[in-house]
Length: 295
Image (cartoon, rainbow, N blue to C red; front, side, top):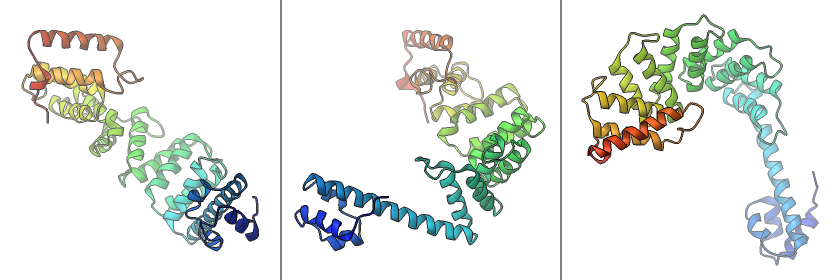
């Protein structure tokens, strides 16, 4: 790292027209950006390196304080330190072995996010670990039981596919539903999947009312396939719904406008074509989405 003397810094500030006291800059890195827009090239370059040096020093101070707290047994500090080693975008401190070490320390103290990541590392064999699906399930469960949504989803996937546990559709649905109940738009696919389980009787007795309920939750969160299924339900009066072709039209139109429609898990081209034909037919018969009953 480039070392700058106090004399050099003061010279650079002097070249900036004295807009800021040199001693103030040495003590406080704030306002440097405004200084860099003024003065000659030399002073701009020097001030740029001042910013870098001050920033690096601050980061070092934070890291030292974080490590000290982690070594004293602070589980949040342990998790954060593990996360730095895991996800450092600049890759200057990325070290999966160290990440595992600190995640484990935090996980053993009950930190849900650390438990999830430790499970993830076991599942993928990162950080010097041998791939171990049973250990992955163990840590996913620990985090899932604390309500950590990513872990709940991973645990559901393990039960659905028989990874590290005996394949069990009832348990898969149990954990998928835990995810769905949190209402996150990032997991609208899971809400749809829960609806599909009730629709098809996968891991549960068939229940069209529950199916439509979960299709509706996923549809509101923008999932195109759920919007399509919900439109069908309205058009046929299924799942406790009263037949309503205006509302069906509304959801058919929403499905075509959904952001995920052309994603890998979006609607097939044949379904898109079918929706367009249905929309055209409904409009020709005088139905309008403006008359839809949408909550």
